[in-house]
Picture 1 (cartoon, rainbow, N blue to C red):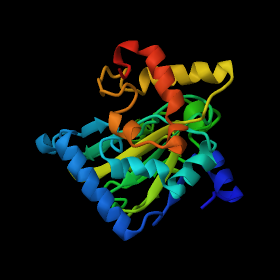
Picture 2: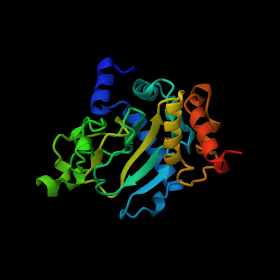
Picture 3: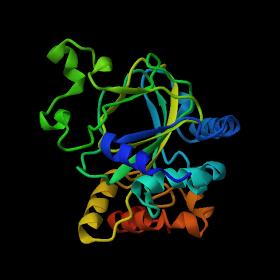
Picture 4: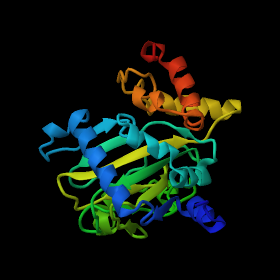
Amino acid sequence: MKLTDRQVNFFKTFGYLHFPGLLGPDEAAWIIEEFEATIQDVGGGKNHDGTKRTMFGGPIEHRPRLSGLLDDPRILDVLGGVLGEDFNYCSGDGNYYTGDTGWHPDGNWGQLFAAKLAFYLDPLTASTGALRVIPGSHRPDHWVRKEGIDPNKSLDLYGVHPKDFPSAAVLETQPGDVVIFNHDTYHAAFGGSARRRMFTMNCTRHCTDPEDMATLRKYLSIHSPGGYKVRTGGGMFFPGILDTAGPSRMEHLRQPVDIHNELFPEFARR
């Protein structure tokens, strides 16, 4: 399922893509089952009471079947079509979300450097926590960024509730849908339940030149287990995803592992 030129152009211009039904109902069912087992076992899900978000790192890294998503040709085609076939997998987060998230980007890199692949595990509509994006807001010249507008203050500024921020798009999803967006794209969710399930895979370009390598070091100094002072037992990744990796998967893991070891030698896998 290689991305078309139109899909690539859409992502570059608007900062996101939505793939309804990329994964079939049977696949969505086992992914939900594996995710539930993971968040309950290692992600703090047993203590979730709905008053705040429950989040844990490396959601695909704890169980072999979920780790295998990084080998799935459809997932590889989506990520590779956006970031290049030699992209880096840089972990992610698993969540029970509670309520609204408010508008925010996940980065301010000013370029297509990192993207988030998101799996939504509950049916979500505009009124029940579906992802909203501001198309084009990843671009440094977008009016939200250029004019320093905070979409969360739109009620005070314009008399418009943030959920109705002008130009925002709502991406209603079903389990099995996949969304990918540039880390710099402003996104939010409103009206969600107290136990909204989703997990992500964060990925970057593979880096070779000095400028890109410096950006990747900065990225991993923030968005990595070492950056959060988390001991995985496997350095950059929880060991399960490494122990089950073949050569093709390792192409997406090796550069983050090496740089994480350099940045955080105290957390390196022994």
